[in-house]
View (cartoon, rainbow, N blue to C red):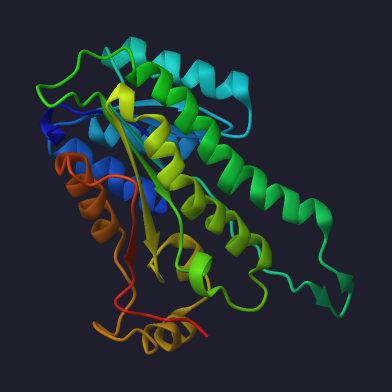
Length: 251
């Protein structure tokens, strides 16, 4: 697989890691369809890169089915799916106001884990119809985990659980889809300069960056995008989780 001939659906691509990935893929010649709930921003990014946009709720089966169908119709196929949609609210299991809100925990799992699986399973159905490459490849799925899956901090029970699920499903999903020639990978980013983090202010960002081993800075979304592009083109990467964190180990 080459980025120049890739037809990709990317969730959460109206901003952050997803937007950077959409821009990188398109710059390398890929066709891109953005799946996001932010209509205004999603359409703007799609227009910038010469791609497509469809409003999508990753937790809703009908919405994702429609999005995959739309992408297949516009691009002719789907050969890559990158899951970047996600949320990260913070709450302790037992805080000053009582126990962790159950509805919030469920929402995080639904969007980050169930939503990623929903997109992956339906994208794999479309990929299975592709004409295989000479090595049998029909597509690749890239899910976004987090280093919180391995060393989650206090207040991250819901987020860490959702990302731990992404880590856990990578290998079995890769095994499930092997006969169809579909690879499955996960990227576990560390602390990245996304809109969510930028909103915390420069002082907090500088403090977080100081904990990164080397280089002592926040990750750039473009670095996530570059790794996603490399995964698409490196056909022997499969069933693995790659930490992208500057050797940061949270405590």
